[in-house]
Image (cartoon, rainbow, N blue to C red; front, side, top):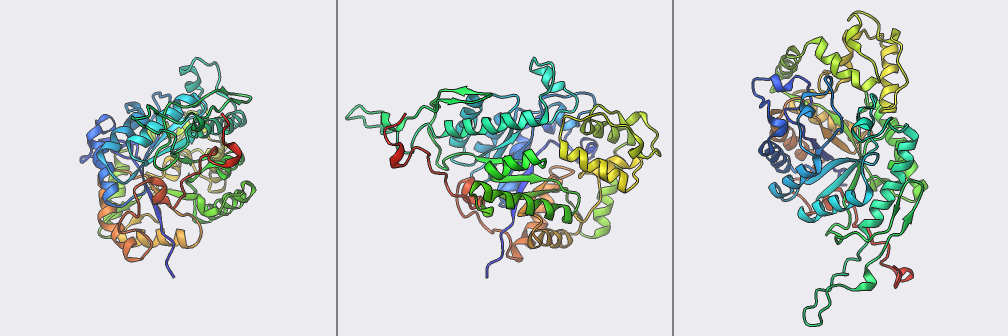
Length: 448
């Protein structure tokens, strides 16, 4: 009996996820704005047969922002460059449903899907902004409330996917002798009218070889899970423990039947930050080296942005974090609630916070030898906590290179990870079918 195959994505962000990674002796401090650096990272991940090279985004910065997002490329522009630098790996970029328009976004991702020959994916986010700075960058007085953002997202994705079906697969005849460029019966207006959007269509680009870009999401709130259960094909999570991940895994997969979807049509990837050493002691030394580059103030300054309009740096390091009065948050709600729970249960001090909560900082089961890390990854998948992993390496490129060189061969030996790509599109890598064009059936023939 063949074993379940693990999915892998590489989170590519400048010098790495650790806030102080840019200070490391091996780091290129200009990495976040160096396209050749990103191309090489994508090639390393492709050599490791990863499913996805992933580019995140944010639409506002301040003094508390991670150094690698203070100076960065637009993600859709960047994955276009990665498409030309690679030939097999999927390329996924983040784009917001709160601060974008469906027609433009649909056209951009369809374009990258063509350029990459069917390897593009869209990481759909509603933008969790606890400070409201993003709204101000887009001429708005306030950031939309959480539930309103998800109501808009529900419409947004319907419009985008509808536009991606504007043309049936064989619509472009290109018959020079007859002078027929396209079959008019196979071009379709969307004519969508909803609460948030009114979009006519059609989109001015054909469907790609994989039909539509893959949909990626990361929401863990009830609204986020509902949207994912209905529309997502990959979900990125960052659960605090294997048991928490199992609960989420069961919850989300069980909701899919409401929308007549099979659980295997969605891959759930747990975010991990592996630090690899030839021995466990060497891995711990690498971890400690990174931590020594970070002052408590820097760590708290970065973390403040995730918890609403709260400045952790003004509190004593030995103060219990649960004693802080937190304002109402309009950011990433599920993450906020989980962090508050852990602060109280574990009696964390303010000085503990960065090291406890930031995956690139905390030492866990994924800091160790290649064998230890491969074994732990196998346990997560076998026990139903995840279908695979999103690697958020604390230090790049070293962390990704070490993983590909030392951990990937062990996963392959275990029979849980590919030796070669089975196909050429991202959907083929993930075991997803090409979505059928909604107009390509007899009941819709002749409609527009």
